[in-house]
View 1 (cartoon, each protein chain N blue to C red):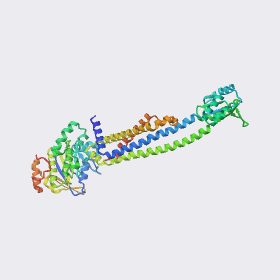
View 2: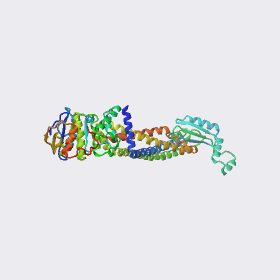
View 3: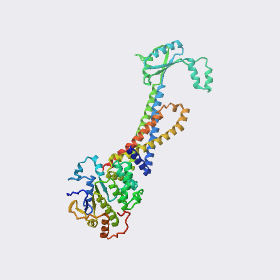
View 4: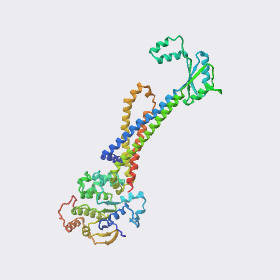
Length: 303
Length: 233
């Protein structure tokens, strides 16, 4: 127990005595943690947006203008039995018109809409797949391609099927590209900052290599010399991570949270949880700093 | 080269720069390992020790260097205390022993100074205090007076002599033949790594005080000269 206090006191003494290198190490850790703390949620967000958009992809089955509600309900029942269909929505003529009105708003078009003698919109059935990748197979089930090239829908009342698979593919291509680019940048950043942290710690130890030599000549064991350095690294990591997390939290409260209230888009970024992120950052900062100190010291202990 | 030291002996090794004095001292604490041959301390070959035991060997040997090798950002007290902390001494023991040894070397007034606030002689005293604080059976000194003026050197030699009289074996490397001749102790002379002379002078059993008086007289330094803080005993 006395040992622990001694090592702690030694580490604190070293931090106080070499304030400038210690400060440099702490600032390095702060910047690194800050960068990673910003990047991890951004990457996470880009993949969740992708998923969000894809989950909204549907098949729209349009009925013929003269199809009756009874026919449409029958079609809906048959579609519900197709595998990979999660659920279906029945949109009646009236509903479709209401939706259209809502989309148009109170513009000049709205006046034109009221002049129509009867509702020109067909009954629509929205089909939600369990996964966007199954859109095509479900469509093939609803409208079977036949040998003579003519499509044969499951019911004569079906006029056609609208498929957003292409849109899905486009979105996937773009988000994948974005994700890859962000990941590459993040990895480069991580490597650069690791080397920066290692180098800063190395410099501060290099400045004290003579001290280490003297300790060895007086008969100190390697671990007796190493522990204070490891604890010093631990403290540097802890302080750096603490400051960075404080800044991240301020950023979250001041910038992200107000935006999230106004924009559904940001709110939808159900990104990595803040507590989770903090734990990740603090853990890695501390471990890296402590390990960096301990490992760098090895070179100077070979006397 | 082959020689042995007896327990409680005070011996010098002399020779020109580069003749191997420092290397000899460093082989004794296994800072360098000899290409061939044996180094026996208390009957054990130290080069056969496991690496992890080397620190324990060094704790049983006090070492004093020409360039003092003090820890620059620690006070006199902490420098000496470090040697005790290394061996796992308790706080009470440290608090008792460090002031005692600093009184012995005559630095009781400079306990809280940093090494760069001290003169060369004072730094060397701190170094000796650190080497001797856990009362090792063997004290090695590599050119302990190499950077010091003659008067200060006598003070250091007097200190080493006093330590020797407590029963500690003292082994000093130096190029200062004048000093060695007047000490009248056993002298090993080295030349290009070879032992060329091993003379045991008949040293008298004189007190530290007598020793200092004689040394000053023979070196032509006034007895009441500047005493560099060491207490008269």
